[in-house]
Image (spheres, rainbow, N blue to C red):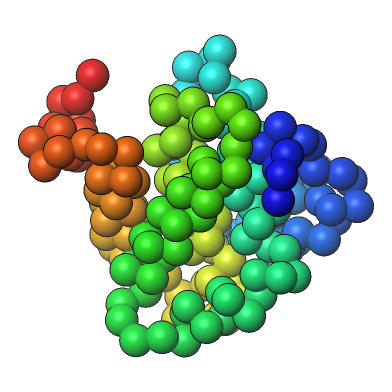
Length: 168
């Protein structure tokens, strides 16, 4: 999908996304939805890049071509936390591979977290698996962050520091 990061989603494509993916007019999130709040950690100068990565990830996740893949992934054995973590880490890797230029390093983890929360909402609301609990989401987030950090060359000590909030 060349140009997926640099392009904007057309209004017709936005209307194809699940209803929960579009902001309601009154600005309130749907009931039972997870709010990551991760965008608050993104520096203002990187917000546009963050939004593009998240939009591109959603475009891939909700594309008709991915429907069977998603259902197959979720039907497999294993805990939902692991399935979500690996699926979103793989999505980030795919987006980064296709991006020209590469994704800004400082938006990768926040965008991945936002996409993970979105995926958890989608899985729960679409009935593709049992509803994801906040504890499962926390576990999935930790696992996914570790996977993403490893993909980008972090060593075990750097990952421990990042997970404890001490990494600069």
